[in-house]
Length: 93
Image 1 (cartoon, one colour):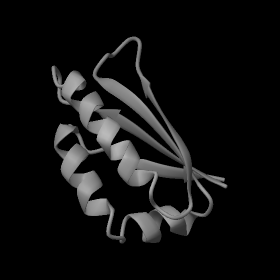
Image 2 (tube, one colour; image 1 turned 30 degrees about the vertical axis):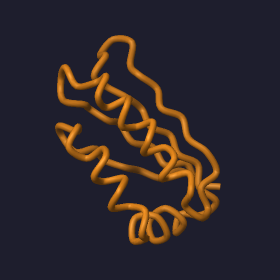
Image 3 (tube, one colour; image 1 turned 30 degrees about the horizontal axis):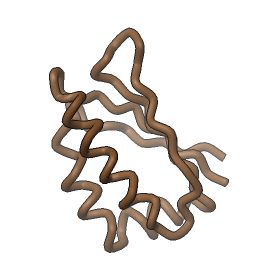
């Protein structure tokens, strides 16, 4: 199993909008082959910061199957405009 880790810095004041959009985005990513589960945690000290943890069966399920697949454009449309700066994503075994 692979753990995808992303620190998400949301544009200040847009956290409520981000969380609403993430609700829809979760249904998008969860339909991707190899998706196992996810957690989204809001930072206590910085309320516009989040930690996203996504579990995948393999690295390729995320990097190829999801990012290069038909579901990713909707994920991007729902969420990418909330980030400043754009998050760095890392994978752990």
